[in-house]
Length: 235
Length: 241
Image (cartoon, rainbow over all chains, first blue to last red; front, side, top):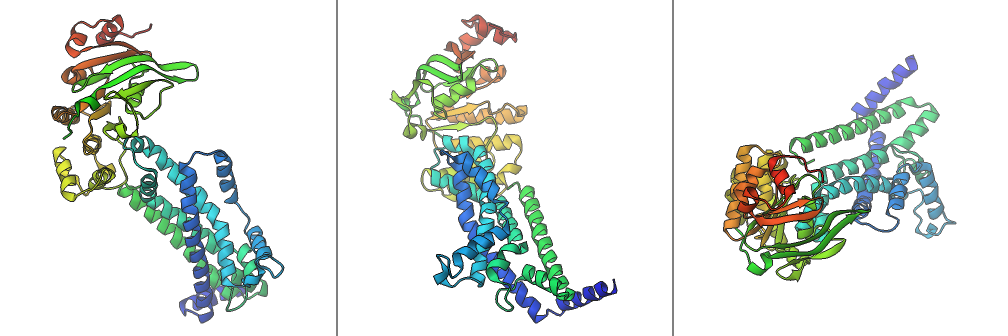
């Protein structure tokens, strides 16, 4: 108990003193996860909107697949990217394994289905509401898509932030393709895993505190966004 | 608001059928919709009034038969000269002014002056910057009507626009519809409200079980309808056959 209390004390000291190593790990975590989230939104939002508004053969199967891929295990994604990027793999020549870029690729692959599936649901709900009126107004498809994405902006921002929350908290994919290399590919989650296994609880706890703070901030922001949208009837 | 080009505001249906499964929800309707009048479609629940309205406007395709406006089969170009107000207003999640601007942009430029002019005509200029979905029910329907009339339609379809509104809001909606009609817009109006139909209608289309029972001048319909079904309906009796 005394060791834990001491570890907590040291952890708070690291956070409050803005320890250099701590900041480096946090900065890399945010860079990787924010970039992956942005890429996932660029791919996932139009994909979700397209599935929402189109009627094609195999549409239900596509929706089932997207929903199923939301539960893709991070270690499986990491393994897949590892196989692609390893020296023996088809993309080994790019020498991306054990780099932040590989981590970004893995997290993008992980959260794109989440963004696509959730945005599909959001856009489809709005599309069903607007469809008859848009048909009456003879709104062209491109205009309708833009209108739906804009009108669903608050909900879609929520989708994006949910994707970020998932990315920043995962460890399986980034530890496989990143290697948890000090000063290169060590992020918060992989550092916590390593430091805990070494028994260095202070740094692990400090990172844990920051990770929880990020999770709380993301969720508080989501709540605030939601309340603002409802208040101004833009939800 | 609205300039009616006489041919385009004259409609016709030929052997119109709308079928779901084995049920003909609209059953062989041959109807002449005269230009220039305010036509009210009436009938008991399930008569096919809203379906007929949607078929006339091309929102749904008939199973059998065709719809004509101005002597031409209804197509996308003709539908652009029409507009519809739904029973429950569907407003974009934007401001009042932005809802008007959206439809004006569909047909060309959307100037702020024109947007405000339209809102003033329906008494919503003061709420221009407000979120449309925060308006009251009556205001939302007025906005929906303004949005439809902003397109200068030859034909305006209204599906029970004042069904859930109070008398003051209903009066406001009717005043706007009358003004549009006076400016030459052909009106096709579905309502359950006998009083409203008496106030507005030039001619009445009475439906029962998907069939056209009668289409008569309003005065004749309310004073001496041709059909027993219409008599029962006006008397407030249930129609079983």
